Amino acid sequence: MTAVATWPGRAESWLDDRGKGAWIAAMVVGFIVFWPIGLAILAYMIWGKQMFGKSCKANRANRTHLGVHRPSGNAAFDSYKSETLKRLEDEQAAFGAFLDRLREAKDKAEFDAFMDERARKRAEEARAADAEA
Image (cartoon, rainbow, N blue to C red; front, side, top):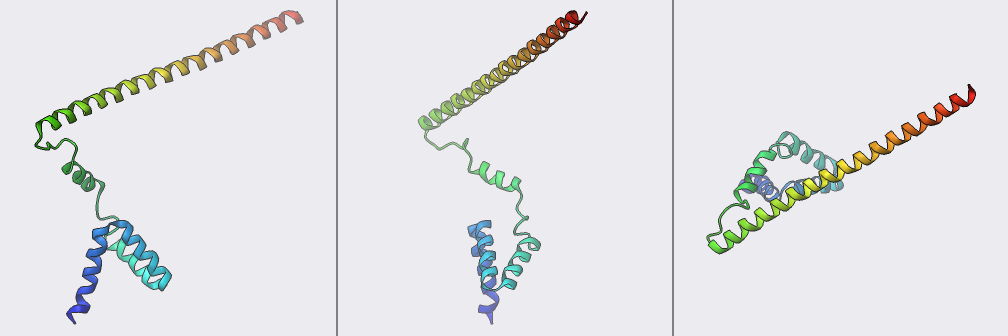
């Protein structure tokens, strides 16, 4: 009887170790084999908080714990890594500024074209009004 009681727990922990993709695959296989099994797995995923139980904040905390800024213990490598990250941040900021200038130039060109078109239409309307008078 203990083997029957423990296999669901082992299956759950096995699926948890492999992530949400494994749960979804198990659900799909359950639907293919016998639809009530897939439905039961789906219900467990939703109401057992497998699908929505882990927040993005917890995932972000795990990534930060494994993070980029943790020292490796090698001073030369840590120095190189910090210099490289600083250089990449500077390049990203410079590229962002370049894109902003590019957008401003494009907007100015479009606005100037609009104003030129508007002035041309007004001049044509004024010529047409003068021709009629």
